[in-house]
Image (cartoon, rainbow, N blue to C red; front, side, top):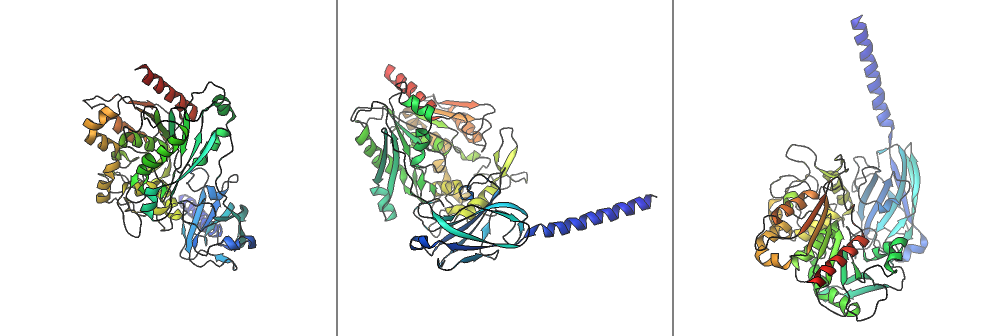
Length: 514
Protein backbone atom coordinates (compact mmCIF):
# COMPACT_ATOMS: atom_id res chain seq x y z
CA UNK A 1 0.00 0.00 0.00
CA UNK A 2 2.83 2.35 0.88
CA UNK A 3 4.53 1.72 -2.46
CA UNK A 4 1.27 2.37 -4.33
CA UNK A 5 0.85 5.69 -2.50
CA UNK A 6 4.43 6.68 -3.19
CA UNK A 7 4.06 5.72 -6.86
CA UNK A 8 0.82 7.65 -7.19
CA UNK A 9 2.36 10.69 -5.48
CA UNK A 10 5.44 10.52 -7.73
CA UNK A 11 3.31 10.25 -10.88
CA UNK A 12 1.12 13.16 -9.77
CA UNK A 13 4.20 15.25 -9.05
CA UNK A 14 5.73 14.48 -12.43
CA UNK A 15 2.42 15.28 -14.12
CA UNK A 16 2.24 18.62 -12.28
CA UNK A 17 5.85 19.52 -13.08
CA UNK A 18 5.47 18.58 -16.73
CA UNK A 19 2.43 20.79 -17.02
CA UNK A 20 4.21 23.57 -15.19
CA UNK A 21 6.95 23.41 -17.78
CA UNK A 22 4.46 23.40 -20.63
CA UNK A 23 2.48 26.19 -19.10
CA UNK A 24 5.70 28.17 -18.55
CA UNK A 25 6.62 27.76 -22.19
CA UNK A 26 3.19 28.72 -23.39
CA UNK A 27 2.90 31.79 -21.14
CA UNK A 28 5.77 33.66 -22.79
CA UNK A 29 5.46 35.06 -26.30
CA UNK A 30 7.45 37.05 -28.82
CA UNK A 31 6.31 40.62 -29.36
CA UNK A 32 7.59 42.67 -32.28
CA UNK A 33 6.73 46.34 -32.70
CA UNK A 34 6.49 48.14 -36.00
CA UNK A 35 7.36 51.80 -35.22
CA UNK A 36 6.59 54.56 -37.70
CA UNK A 37 6.66 58.36 -37.60
CA UNK A 38 3.68 60.56 -38.30
CA UNK A 39 4.21 62.54 -41.48
CA UNK A 40 3.67 65.92 -39.80
CA UNK A 41 6.62 65.28 -37.44
CA UNK A 42 9.15 64.20 -40.03
CA UNK A 43 10.64 67.68 -40.43
CA UNK A 44 11.53 67.79 -36.73
CA UNK A 45 12.76 64.18 -36.65
CA UNK A 46 16.46 63.43 -36.14
CA UNK A 47 17.84 60.13 -37.40
CA UNK A 48 20.19 59.56 -34.45
CA UNK A 49 18.94 58.93 -30.93
CA UNK A 50 17.87 56.35 -28.37
CA UNK A 51 14.65 54.40 -28.78
CA UNK A 52 12.68 53.44 -25.66
CA UNK A 53 9.88 50.92 -25.39
CA UNK A 54 7.86 51.14 -22.18
CA UNK A 55 5.62 48.21 -21.23
CA UNK A 56 3.70 49.06 -18.06
CA UNK A 57 1.15 47.32 -15.88
CA UNK A 58 -0.05 50.75 -14.71
CA UNK A 59 -3.32 51.58 -16.47
CA UNK A 60 -3.51 55.17 -15.23
CA UNK A 61 -0.26 56.96 -15.96
CA UNK A 62 1.65 57.34 -19.18
CA UNK A 63 4.33 54.64 -19.23
CA UNK A 64 6.97 57.09 -20.50
CA UNK A 65 6.75 59.03 -17.22
CA UNK A 66 7.54 55.95 -15.12
CA UNK A 67 11.31 55.97 -15.36
CA UNK A 68 11.83 55.13 -11.68
CA UNK A 69 11.11 51.51 -10.71
CA UNK A 70 7.84 51.11 -8.86
CA UNK A 71 7.94 47.94 -6.76
CA UNK A 72 4.15 47.78 -6.62
CA UNK A 73 3.22 48.35 -10.29
CA UNK A 74 5.94 47.29 -12.69
CA UNK A 75 6.98 49.24 -15.75
CA UNK A 76 9.44 47.42 -17.98
CA UNK A 77 11.75 49.46 -20.22
CA UNK A 78 13.79 48.45 -23.26
CA UNK A 79 16.22 50.78 -25.01
CA UNK A 80 18.56 50.82 -27.98
CA UNK A 81 20.76 53.43 -29.64
CA UNK A 82 20.02 53.95 -33.34
CA UNK A 83 22.21 55.98 -35.67
CA UNK A 84 20.11 55.77 -38.83
CA UNK A 85 16.38 55.79 -38.02
CA UNK A 86 14.81 56.72 -41.36
CA UNK A 87 11.45 58.37 -40.56
CA UNK A 88 10.15 57.42 -44.01
CA UNK A 89 10.52 53.75 -43.17
CA UNK A 90 9.10 51.92 -40.20
CA UNK A 91 11.49 50.52 -37.63
CA UNK A 92 10.80 46.90 -36.75
CA UNK A 93 11.81 46.12 -33.19
CA UNK A 94 12.44 42.52 -32.28
CA UNK A 95 14.16 40.92 -29.35
CA UNK A 96 17.48 40.76 -31.15
CA UNK A 97 20.78 41.70 -29.57
CA UNK A 98 21.44 45.37 -29.01
CA UNK A 99 18.51 45.97 -26.71
CA UNK A 100 19.04 46.50 -23.01
CA UNK A 101 16.07 46.03 -20.71
CA UNK A 102 14.96 46.22 -17.11
CA UNK A 103 13.24 42.80 -16.89
CA UNK A 104 14.92 39.40 -17.03
CA UNK A 105 12.86 38.53 -20.10
CA UNK A 106 13.29 39.96 -23.59
CA UNK A 107 10.89 41.08 -26.31
CA UNK A 108 11.18 37.53 -27.67
CA UNK A 109 9.90 36.14 -24.39
CA UNK A 110 7.21 38.42 -22.95
CA UNK A 111 5.07 36.93 -20.13
CA UNK A 112 1.37 36.72 -20.91
CA UNK A 113 -0.71 39.60 -19.61
CA UNK A 114 -2.10 43.04 -20.30
CA UNK A 115 0.39 45.85 -20.90
CA UNK A 116 0.24 49.55 -21.69
CA UNK A 117 2.87 50.24 -24.32
CA UNK A 118 4.44 53.56 -25.24
CA UNK A 119 7.46 54.34 -27.39
CA UNK A 120 9.79 57.34 -26.97
CA UNK A 121 12.35 58.59 -29.46
CA UNK A 122 14.98 60.51 -27.46
CA UNK A 123 16.61 62.57 -30.16
CA UNK A 124 18.01 65.51 -28.16
CA UNK A 125 20.97 65.79 -25.81
CA UNK A 126 20.61 69.30 -24.39
CA UNK A 127 18.90 67.86 -21.32
CA UNK A 128 19.63 64.72 -19.38
CA UNK A 129 16.26 62.94 -19.35
CA UNK A 130 13.79 61.53 -21.83
CA UNK A 131 11.21 64.28 -21.22
CA UNK A 132 13.31 66.90 -23.00
CA UNK A 133 11.17 69.22 -25.15
CA UNK A 134 11.34 68.19 -28.79
CA UNK A 135 11.53 64.46 -28.13
CA UNK A 136 8.87 62.41 -29.90
CA UNK A 137 6.62 59.74 -28.43
CA UNK A 138 3.56 57.66 -29.15
CA UNK A 139 0.19 57.52 -27.50
CA UNK A 140 -0.32 54.85 -24.85
CA UNK A 141 -1.57 51.59 -26.35
CA UNK A 142 -3.20 48.71 -24.48
CA UNK A 143 -2.18 45.24 -25.62
CA UNK A 144 -2.99 41.75 -24.39
CA UNK A 145 -0.16 39.28 -24.80
CA UNK A 146 -1.56 35.76 -25.14
CA UNK A 147 0.24 34.73 -28.31
CA UNK A 148 3.20 35.84 -30.40
CA UNK A 149 2.18 39.00 -32.19
CA UNK A 150 3.14 42.11 -34.05
CA UNK A 151 1.83 45.52 -33.09
CA UNK A 152 2.05 48.90 -34.82
CA UNK A 153 3.01 52.08 -32.96
CA UNK A 154 3.07 55.58 -34.44
CA UNK A 155 5.34 58.29 -33.03
CA UNK A 156 2.84 61.14 -33.25
CA UNK A 157 3.37 63.30 -30.15
CA UNK A 158 6.07 65.81 -29.28
CA UNK A 159 7.25 66.87 -25.83
CA UNK A 160 6.20 70.50 -25.45
CA UNK A 161 8.26 73.27 -23.90
CA UNK A 162 7.86 73.76 -20.18
CA UNK A 163 5.64 76.62 -19.12
CA UNK A 164 5.10 78.50 -15.89
CA UNK A 165 1.50 79.43 -15.15
CA UNK A 166 0.67 83.10 -15.52
CA UNK A 167 0.06 84.94 -12.24
CA UNK A 168 0.56 88.57 -11.16
CA UNK A 169 3.06 87.50 -8.48
CA UNK A 170 5.10 85.11 -10.67
CA UNK A 171 8.24 85.90 -12.63
CA UNK A 172 10.45 83.72 -14.83
CA UNK A 173 14.25 83.98 -14.77
CA UNK A 174 16.55 82.90 -17.60
CA UNK A 175 20.20 83.87 -17.50
CA UNK A 176 23.12 82.82 -19.66
CA UNK A 177 25.91 81.65 -17.38
CA UNK A 178 29.26 82.93 -18.59
CA UNK A 179 31.09 80.48 -16.34
CA UNK A 180 29.23 77.35 -17.43
CA UNK A 181 29.09 78.45 -21.06
CA UNK A 182 32.87 78.78 -21.11
CA UNK A 183 33.22 75.38 -19.41
CA UNK A 184 30.97 73.61 -21.93
CA UNK A 185 31.90 75.71 -24.97
CA UNK A 186 28.24 76.38 -25.66
CA UNK A 187 25.48 78.54 -24.20
CA UNK A 188 24.24 77.28 -20.83
CA UNK A 189 21.12 78.92 -19.43
CA UNK A 190 20.30 79.09 -15.73
CA UNK A 191 16.57 79.12 -15.01
CA UNK A 192 14.38 79.77 -12.00
CA UNK A 193 10.86 80.84 -11.17
CA UNK A 194 9.96 83.48 -8.58
CA UNK A 195 6.89 83.84 -6.39
CA UNK A 196 6.66 87.37 -5.02
CA UNK A 197 4.92 88.25 -1.75
CA UNK A 198 1.55 89.97 -1.69
CA UNK A 199 1.75 93.78 -1.95
CA UNK A 200 5.18 93.40 -3.51
CA UNK A 201 7.07 96.66 -4.03
CA UNK A 202 10.01 96.85 -6.41
CA UNK A 203 13.40 97.65 -4.81
CA UNK A 204 12.12 97.08 -1.28
CA UNK A 205 14.45 94.95 0.84
CA UNK A 206 12.79 91.54 1.24
CA UNK A 207 13.91 88.28 2.82
CA UNK A 208 14.48 85.65 0.17
CA UNK A 209 14.12 81.90 0.10
CA UNK A 210 16.02 79.69 -2.37
CA UNK A 211 14.13 76.42 -2.66
CA UNK A 212 15.84 73.37 -4.16
CA UNK A 213 13.48 70.73 -5.49
CA UNK A 214 13.51 66.99 -5.07
CA UNK A 215 15.44 64.91 -7.57
CA UNK A 216 15.16 66.35 -11.08
CA UNK A 217 12.52 68.94 -10.16
CA UNK A 218 12.45 71.82 -12.58
CA UNK A 219 11.69 75.52 -12.21
CA UNK A 220 8.11 74.93 -13.32
CA UNK A 221 7.28 73.15 -10.04
CA UNK A 222 6.02 76.56 -8.95
CA UNK A 223 2.86 75.50 -10.82
CA UNK A 224 2.10 73.02 -8.03
CA UNK A 225 1.75 75.91 -5.58
CA UNK A 226 -0.14 78.12 -8.00
CA UNK A 227 -2.69 75.32 -8.45
CA UNK A 228 -2.94 74.70 -4.69
CA UNK A 229 -5.98 76.78 -3.79
CA UNK A 230 -5.45 76.57 -0.03
CA UNK A 231 -1.83 77.69 -0.29
CA UNK A 232 -2.53 80.56 -2.67
CA UNK A 233 -5.46 81.81 -0.59
CA UNK A 234 -3.09 81.95 2.37
CA UNK A 235 -0.29 83.51 0.31
CA UNK A 236 -2.37 86.48 -0.86
CA UNK A 237 -4.36 86.89 2.34
CA UNK A 238 -1.90 89.11 4.17
CA UNK A 239 -1.27 86.40 6.79
CA UNK A 240 1.68 84.93 4.92
CA UNK A 241 5.18 86.30 5.61
CA UNK A 242 6.47 88.76 3.03
CA UNK A 243 9.25 86.60 1.64
CA UNK A 244 10.41 86.20 -1.96
CA UNK A 245 10.43 82.54 -3.02
CA UNK A 246 12.85 81.37 -5.71
CA UNK A 247 12.49 77.88 -7.18
CA UNK A 248 15.81 76.75 -8.64
CA UNK A 249 16.07 74.49 -11.67
CA UNK A 250 17.41 70.99 -11.09
CA UNK A 251 18.59 70.24 -14.61
CA UNK A 252 22.24 69.35 -15.18
CA UNK A 253 24.27 67.51 -17.83
CA UNK A 254 24.15 64.14 -16.04
CA UNK A 255 20.87 64.55 -14.19
CA UNK A 256 20.30 66.95 -11.33
CA UNK A 257 23.13 69.50 -11.12
CA UNK A 258 22.96 69.54 -7.31
CA UNK A 259 23.82 73.26 -7.61
CA UNK A 260 27.45 72.45 -6.72
CA UNK A 261 30.82 72.54 -8.48
CA UNK A 262 31.65 69.29 -10.24
CA UNK A 263 34.60 67.95 -12.21
CA UNK A 264 32.13 66.45 -14.65
CA UNK A 265 29.21 68.90 -14.84
CA UNK A 266 31.15 72.11 -14.28
CA UNK A 267 31.02 75.00 -11.78
CA UNK A 268 27.29 75.00 -10.99
CA UNK A 269 27.88 76.21 -7.43
CA UNK A 270 29.93 79.16 -8.61
CA UNK A 271 27.34 79.98 -11.26
CA UNK A 272 24.57 79.98 -8.64
CA UNK A 273 26.21 82.17 -6.01
CA UNK A 274 28.17 84.48 -8.32
CA UNK A 275 25.80 84.84 -11.26
CA UNK A 276 22.20 83.73 -10.70
CA UNK A 277 21.65 84.93 -7.13
CA UNK A 278 23.08 88.43 -7.74
CA UNK A 279 21.02 88.66 -10.93
CA UNK A 280 17.79 87.74 -9.13
CA UNK A 281 18.38 89.98 -6.14
CA UNK A 282 19.29 92.96 -8.26
CA UNK A 283 15.93 92.67 -9.99
CA UNK A 284 13.60 91.83 -7.12
CA UNK A 285 15.11 92.32 -3.71
CA UNK A 286 16.85 95.65 -3.51
CA UNK A 287 19.75 94.28 -1.45
CA UNK A 288 22.55 91.75 -1.66
CA UNK A 289 22.76 91.28 2.10
CA UNK A 290 22.97 87.67 3.29
CA UNK A 291 21.24 88.49 6.58
CA UNK A 292 17.84 87.51 5.26
CA UNK A 293 18.86 84.94 2.63
CA UNK A 294 17.83 81.34 3.28
CA UNK A 295 17.78 77.98 1.54
CA UNK A 296 15.69 74.83 1.90
CA UNK A 297 14.58 71.64 0.24
CA UNK A 298 13.68 68.01 0.68
CA UNK A 299 15.44 64.84 -0.47
CA UNK A 300 17.88 65.99 -3.16
CA UNK A 301 16.84 69.50 -2.17
CA UNK A 302 17.63 68.66 1.44
CA UNK A 303 21.17 67.64 0.49
CA UNK A 304 21.76 70.60 -1.81
CA UNK A 305 20.40 73.23 0.58
CA UNK A 306 22.52 71.85 3.43
CA UNK A 307 25.53 71.69 1.13
CA UNK A 308 25.06 75.30 0.06
CA UNK A 309 24.98 76.39 3.71
CA UNK A 310 28.11 74.37 4.54
CA UNK A 311 30.21 75.16 1.47
CA UNK A 312 29.06 78.79 1.19
CA UNK A 313 28.51 79.50 4.90
CA UNK A 314 28.45 83.28 4.62
CA UNK A 315 26.16 83.31 1.60
CA UNK A 316 23.11 82.00 3.49
CA UNK A 317 21.81 82.72 6.96
CA UNK A 318 19.84 79.55 7.53
CA UNK A 319 19.01 76.20 5.99
CA UNK A 320 15.92 74.03 6.43
CA UNK A 321 16.90 70.61 5.16
CA UNK A 322 14.37 67.78 5.06
CA UNK A 323 15.26 64.12 4.40
CA UNK A 324 18.59 64.97 2.75
CA UNK A 325 20.35 62.48 0.49
CA UNK A 326 23.22 60.66 2.18
CA UNK A 327 25.39 63.27 3.91
CA UNK A 328 28.00 60.86 5.34
CA UNK A 329 29.31 58.19 3.01
CA UNK A 330 30.01 55.63 5.70
CA UNK A 331 26.27 55.36 5.30
CA UNK A 332 25.62 56.02 1.63
CA UNK A 333 22.15 54.66 2.14
CA UNK A 334 23.18 51.16 3.30
CA UNK A 335 26.66 51.18 1.72
CA UNK A 336 29.88 52.08 3.47
CA UNK A 337 31.73 53.18 0.37
CA UNK A 338 35.07 53.22 2.22
CA UNK A 339 34.91 49.65 3.54
CA UNK A 340 32.39 47.65 1.51
CA UNK A 341 33.56 45.76 -1.54
CA UNK A 342 30.25 45.54 -3.35
CA UNK A 343 27.32 47.93 -3.64
CA UNK A 344 24.71 45.31 -4.60
CA UNK A 345 25.48 42.61 -2.04
CA UNK A 346 26.10 43.25 1.65
CA UNK A 347 28.66 41.59 3.89
CA UNK A 348 26.20 38.81 4.72
CA UNK A 349 25.69 37.87 1.08
CA UNK A 350 22.23 39.41 0.79
CA UNK A 351 20.99 41.69 -1.96
CA UNK A 352 21.15 45.23 -0.61
CA UNK A 353 17.79 47.04 -0.64
CA UNK A 354 17.51 50.65 -1.74
CA UNK A 355 13.91 51.25 -0.70
CA UNK A 356 11.61 50.08 2.08
CA UNK A 357 8.17 50.57 3.55
CA UNK A 358 7.86 52.53 6.79
CA UNK A 359 7.28 49.16 8.48
CA UNK A 360 10.78 48.16 7.43
CA UNK A 361 9.82 45.74 4.66
CA UNK A 362 12.33 45.98 1.77
CA UNK A 363 10.64 46.99 -1.49
CA UNK A 364 13.39 47.24 -4.08
CA UNK A 365 17.00 46.13 -4.48
CA UNK A 366 19.79 48.48 -5.46
CA UNK A 367 20.70 46.13 -8.31
CA UNK A 368 17.21 46.48 -9.81
CA UNK A 369 17.23 50.25 -9.33
CA UNK A 370 20.60 50.59 -11.08
CA UNK A 371 19.40 48.43 -13.99
CA UNK A 372 16.70 51.02 -14.67
CA UNK A 373 19.38 53.69 -14.84
CA UNK A 374 21.54 51.44 -17.04
CA UNK A 375 18.65 51.24 -19.51
CA UNK A 376 18.05 55.00 -19.43
CA UNK A 377 21.69 55.86 -20.16
CA UNK A 378 22.86 56.05 -23.76
CA UNK A 379 26.09 54.40 -22.56
CA UNK A 380 23.93 51.43 -21.40
CA UNK A 381 25.11 52.28 -17.88
CA UNK A 382 23.90 54.53 -15.08
CA UNK A 383 26.76 56.97 -15.73
CA UNK A 384 24.68 59.16 -18.06
CA UNK A 385 21.17 57.97 -17.26
CA UNK A 386 19.97 61.32 -15.96
CA UNK A 387 18.95 59.45 -12.81
CA UNK A 388 19.89 59.71 -9.16
CA UNK A 389 23.08 57.67 -9.26
CA UNK A 390 24.16 59.30 -12.51
CA UNK A 391 23.96 62.69 -10.84
CA UNK A 392 25.75 61.52 -7.70
CA UNK A 393 28.57 60.05 -9.75
CA UNK A 394 28.92 63.19 -11.86
CA UNK A 395 29.13 65.34 -8.73
CA UNK A 396 31.38 63.23 -6.52
CA UNK A 397 33.63 61.35 -8.98
CA UNK A 398 36.61 62.44 -11.08
CA UNK A 399 36.39 62.46 -14.85
CA UNK A 400 36.59 59.10 -16.55
CA UNK A 401 36.69 57.88 -20.12
CA UNK A 402 34.62 59.03 -23.11
CA UNK A 403 33.35 62.11 -21.31
CA UNK A 404 31.71 60.06 -18.54
CA UNK A 405 32.41 60.23 -14.81
CA UNK A 406 34.40 57.44 -13.17
CA UNK A 407 32.07 54.89 -11.67
CA UNK A 408 32.04 54.28 -7.93
CA UNK A 409 30.75 50.78 -8.59
CA UNK A 410 30.42 48.53 -11.60
CA UNK A 411 26.98 48.93 -13.25
CA UNK A 412 26.41 45.17 -13.47
CA UNK A 413 28.48 43.51 -10.73
CA UNK A 414 28.36 46.25 -8.09
CA UNK A 415 32.10 46.01 -7.36
CA UNK A 416 33.31 49.23 -5.65
CA UNK A 417 36.38 51.14 -6.84
CA UNK A 418 38.31 52.19 -3.72
CA UNK A 419 40.19 54.98 -5.51
CA UNK A 420 36.95 56.59 -6.64
CA UNK A 421 35.54 56.23 -3.13
CA UNK A 422 38.47 58.30 -1.83
CA UNK A 423 37.60 61.00 -4.34
CA UNK A 424 34.04 61.17 -3.03
CA UNK A 425 35.29 62.43 0.35
CA UNK A 426 35.20 66.05 -0.79
CA UNK A 427 31.38 65.97 -0.60
CA UNK A 428 31.10 63.81 2.51
CA UNK A 429 29.52 66.43 4.80
CA UNK A 430 30.68 64.78 7.99
CA UNK A 431 34.31 64.69 6.83
CA UNK A 432 34.09 68.21 5.40
CA UNK A 433 32.69 69.66 8.62
CA UNK A 434 35.20 67.74 10.75
CA UNK A 435 38.19 68.86 8.68
CA UNK A 436 37.08 72.50 8.60
CA UNK A 437 35.32 72.93 11.95
CA UNK A 438 37.56 75.64 13.51
CA UNK A 439 36.78 77.94 10.60
CA UNK A 440 33.37 76.59 9.56
CA UNK A 441 31.77 76.11 12.97
CA UNK A 442 31.40 79.79 13.93
CA UNK A 443 29.99 80.63 10.50
CA UNK A 444 27.08 78.18 10.71
CA UNK A 445 26.01 78.73 14.32
CA UNK A 446 22.26 79.21 14.49
CA UNK A 447 21.84 78.36 10.83
CA UNK A 448 21.31 74.57 10.65
CA UNK A 449 17.93 72.85 10.86
CA UNK A 450 17.59 69.27 9.60
CA UNK A 451 14.56 66.99 9.77
CA UNK A 452 14.69 63.26 9.10
CA UNK A 453 12.21 60.43 9.41
CA UNK A 454 13.79 57.51 11.22
CA UNK A 455 12.11 55.11 8.81
CA UNK A 456 13.13 57.03 5.71
CA UNK A 457 12.05 55.09 2.63
CA UNK A 458 15.58 55.27 1.16
CA UNK A 459 17.58 54.57 4.34
CA UNK A 460 18.82 58.17 4.46
CA UNK A 461 18.43 58.41 8.21
CA UNK A 462 21.65 56.43 8.71
CA UNK A 463 23.87 59.10 7.12
CA UNK A 464 22.08 61.88 8.96
CA UNK A 465 22.56 60.03 12.26
CA UNK A 466 26.28 59.83 11.51
CA UNK A 467 26.44 63.57 10.84
CA UNK A 468 24.44 64.31 13.99
CA UNK A 469 26.79 62.17 16.09
CA UNK A 470 29.77 64.15 14.86
CA UNK A 471 28.16 67.53 15.54
CA UNK A 472 27.50 66.47 19.14
CA UNK A 473 31.27 66.08 19.65
CA UNK A 474 32.21 69.54 18.38
CA UNK A 475 33.92 72.19 20.49
CA UNK A 476 34.96 75.79 19.94
CA UNK A 477 32.16 76.21 19.13
CA UNK A 478 29.83 73.46 20.23
CA UNK A 479 27.36 73.07 17.37
CA UNK A 480 23.86 74.37 18.00
CA UNK A 481 22.43 72.67 14.92
CA UNK A 482 18.86 71.48 15.36
CA UNK A 483 18.52 67.95 13.96
CA UNK A 484 15.15 66.32 14.51
CA UNK A 485 14.45 62.62 14.02
CA UNK A 486 10.82 61.50 13.93
CA UNK A 487 10.04 57.89 14.76
CA UNK A 488 8.09 55.87 12.18
CA UNK A 489 8.17 58.71 9.64
CA UNK A 490 9.21 58.22 6.03
CA UNK A 491 10.78 60.26 3.27
CA UNK A 492 9.84 63.96 3.22
CA UNK A 493 6.58 63.30 5.07
CA UNK A 494 6.81 66.49 7.14
CA UNK A 495 7.97 68.89 4.44
CA UNK A 496 5.69 71.57 3.05
CA UNK A 497 6.32 74.96 1.46
CA UNK A 498 4.06 76.69 3.96
CA UNK A 499 5.84 75.07 6.91
CA UNK A 500 9.27 76.14 5.64
CA UNK A 501 8.12 79.70 4.96
CA UNK A 502 6.88 79.94 8.54
CA UNK A 503 10.17 78.47 9.81
CA UNK A 504 12.04 81.12 7.86
CA UNK A 505 9.88 83.80 9.45
CA UNK A 506 10.74 82.41 12.89
CA UNK A 507 14.43 82.63 11.97
CA UNK A 508 13.91 86.23 10.82
CA UNK A 509 12.21 87.09 14.11
CA UNK A 510 15.14 85.61 16.04
CA UNK A 511 17.62 87.62 13.97
CA UNK A 512 15.67 90.82 14.54
CA UNK A 513 15.62 90.26 18.30
CA UNK A 514 19.42 90.24 18.51
